[in-house]
Image (cartoon, rainbow, N blue to C red):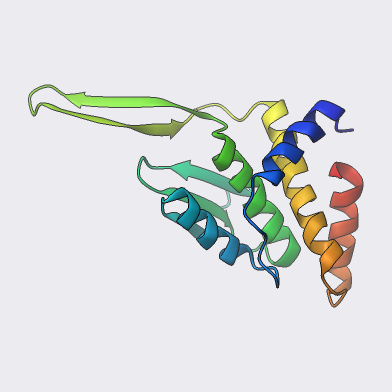
Length: 160
């Protein structure tokens, strides 16, 4: 069960989102975030068996969100929103400085930690994505498939 502190933190992050697109389109949200943050945000559909369901990567100049190509509909949106939360809050990053003294340059940026996100960060990201999708669900028609409706019910029951 998600505790009150996790819900409170996730709610604050949801409140910082720009207006959610209507009709709902996660790619439109990503375009808006790209504009408001003045930083490219790329979505990548990949089919790598060893990859977790989703991953956010900051390459120092662009943000990249990878998700499994088999994820579609509500499930895909949930994964992408989960990674957006990590991105907005800066979960799992640490400063990076690479230098080549012989060439006289310094590269700064951020890279993902080598270890997994901690449990609190994961709970916040899961709760954030469920809260955002609940906002969308509450304003849209019910013309979703039975599978997507069941996925919504499962996520809502666990993380809402």
